[in-house]
Image (cartoon, rainbow, N blue to C red; front, side, top):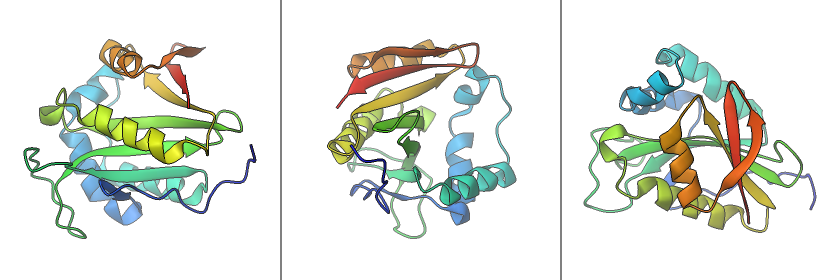
Length: 176
């Protein structure tokens, strides 16, 4: 497998690339999922911090960030993407050829709390796996803090414990 990274991984019909100008939208997703930040023991990031993170991602040609859209009419969100008019239900941040060549790593998959446990996370992970199949050998998920719910989620999708980077995070992996 080559370490050349494609110019862009094509988003699905249920997502679009997030860029620094989308900081307020990503911040709204963060604010709609406060338990995540409680679990990882950090305060909710400010819009300025979110913009800085999106700028860093934008400059890293191996890293991709996406706004995630409701895949059906039954899923409702009050966060509307002004570019598409679609309801934003989450945010995805992943990197290719990390930690090793041929790997992909999900840095963050965050679904709005009121929409969690409805199959959306599974939907977006399955979609990402399909898009990355043939480009990466394995997909890893980084789990920050003591997030047992996230561990269970990734295990139900066929991921298994791969790397111990305690005390901050564990990584789970699945061969594609």
